[in-house]
Length: 213
Image (cartoon, rainbow, N blue to C red; front, side, top):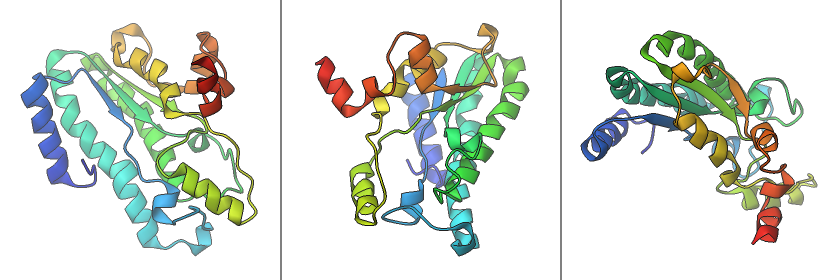
């Protein structure tokens, strides 16, 4: 679904309840990235951005996600348990790459991160956990094209971890509720994997995964 389209969100919610009857966990991974807004490199200075760029980004990454939460949390509240997992970025926590020109993406993810902390407190009474996961430097759709465009501009690129590296922490969070005691937290998928003996970032790159086969 397009999470910025209320009708599509409603249809997805109805289809979910029709098939499964309830919702136990919600993973908010849909988002607009910088390269969707400013193709192909995703780079533009803050002063070069327009108000419409910020509205478009926030319509998806903040308001779209909020609309999904408002729908899909309802069965959790009725059942008295559930888990919401918002996928953000470590760059929303601090200015991790202040020279990377990733606004308004980073600002939208900072809003999502902060929203998660407040939501966790509000829904704890319903026994619903709400946490935010930072994936790290992860490959996604269009990464190869973006990296090629960056290299053409003389920018350096490095091998990224594959999206599957967030699966262990997301599966764990999907299986808990607020009674577990882990809610309102920001969790690094990279640190989670290291802590649980699942390898470092290199282990989860394409070459690292191929070496295990």
